[in-house]
Amino acid sequence: MPKIYLIDVTNRDGVQTARLGLSKLEKTMINIYLDEMGIFQSEFGFPTTRHEQHYLQANLEMVQRGIIKNIVLEGWIRGIVEDVELAIKRIPDIKHLNLSSSTSSQMIDGKFHGRKTRDDIIHEMTDAVDATLAHGIKSVGVNAEDASRTDTDFLVKFGQEAKAHGAVRLRYCDTLGYDNPFSIYETTLTLAQKVELPIEIHCHGDLGMAVATSLAGAKGAIDGGQDAYINTTINGIGERAGNADLVSVILAITKSKDFNEKYQLAGNIKLDMAWKIAQFSSYAFGVEIPINQPGVGKNCFAHASGIHADGVLKDPQNYELYSFEELGRGEPILVETGREICTGQYSGISGFRHVVNNLSEDITLPENKDKANEILELVRYANVETHKPLVEDELKFICQYPDIARKLLTMTPLA
Image (cartoon, rainbow, N blue to C red):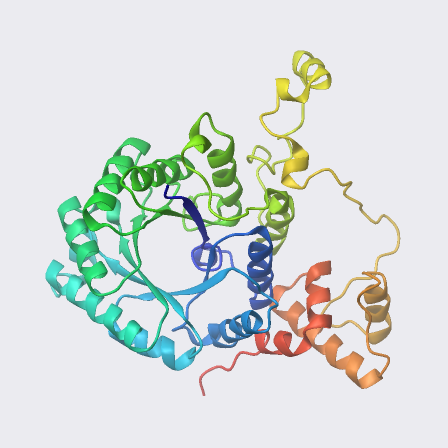
């Protein structure tokens, strides 16, 4: 039976959100957490973008060294040969790419103003797929941007041509959140049956239905005999009204009525990572988690009504569909109310050593003053990027892997 795989796009679509962004260290921590959580793939960045170069190479090196263990790291580029060549030139170790092409009449006419036809779009895409495989790329997916406003017959032709040239997946992009669960089901069912490729579902929340359309799209792909790959972002952060939220999608697949009996998640997803990854993403983006966010919002397990409180005390399942322990919640949140030593861009070695010594017995600074100062300097640069104190896991990461941290914090602007 085909299954549902999760591809998180926080480090690509999430960071494209207006007014928001992540440092290269924060993007790296998200990749590490996604890997620990058991997510199949992270769309970890833009291999054609100059300032991503060191970050992308560093993360691929972490895969080679076994720091990142299982997750597939895949880059996003436009579906043109020029982007393929530039991506390979800048990130020669990259092995997985998604190529994006605009497919709707609105996009083709509105972006290119008559300079490109539908046939041009297909030729550009197939040439780009050929170029990726010629460079030894292990897997290439093709993205149909604005697929929900694209004629289905053209989508079928687009997908069939992609398959004929060696693409392994077709990404159906509900770029403007235009689909509803009923329309997307019919389209992904047709694509799965006629293209005979696994279908990626990439949904936005402009109409508030990103999670629902993601599940319906996955159902269509599986009913059509193909694996489904749902795109998510942590806390739903994404352009405009956001994307399908990672935790909400997992909960919907595994907890909604009768769904999981037939449509199952692939791999070993660790739901108890949900609280940690949601909290870190909230801190890194500087966006508070909504109080009613599924699974990780403050009110998810809060009961004020007398009837509800009485019922949940007698048996939590009376008013809770899942337990807080399943999401990794429950530990007390400690707030220091007295003296606090923070790490920042102007920290000194004495205060920094105090902070590190209080992190964990496993992490210590070198006694050698010069080596300790080298690590402190990396922490300072990381703080310059984030403009906020680093969390415990970030400090541990820099202490454990200073050579990788140096790559993440290195950006060389154009002369």
